[in-house]
Amino acid sequence: MGLDPATLNYSIEERSEAGRIVARGEMGEAELTYRLRPGGRLIADHTGVPPSMGGMGVGTALVERLYALAKERDLKIVPACPFVEDKMAKHPQWRDVLTA
Image (tube, rainbow, N blue to C red; front, side, top):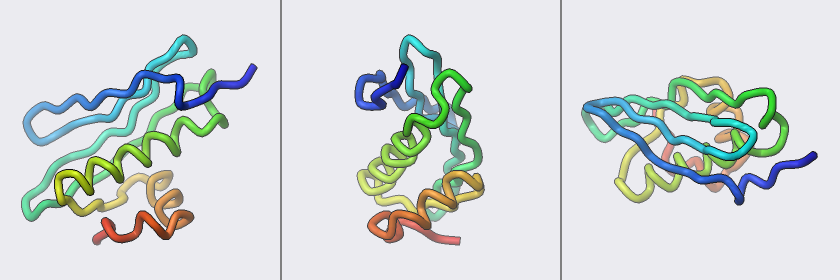
């Protein structure tokens, strides 16, 4: 049984200097966590997708929303999470928000 990431409910939850983008659906909850730092930097530090949602594009959809968040708030992404780093490298259109 497949899962269409577009059918999930996405939200952004932030507290102080940390946040997460969450995808919720019948098959579980996935998240991409980040920390906000001075100078407009957003450190993407973890992507977690449960096995029930794995391999269906949910992680990529979370990174897409991370990119949109960075563009909307004029932030630069530091991809500390290997998954985020890999996805950003595979999508050159997202590189305009990358920084070290």
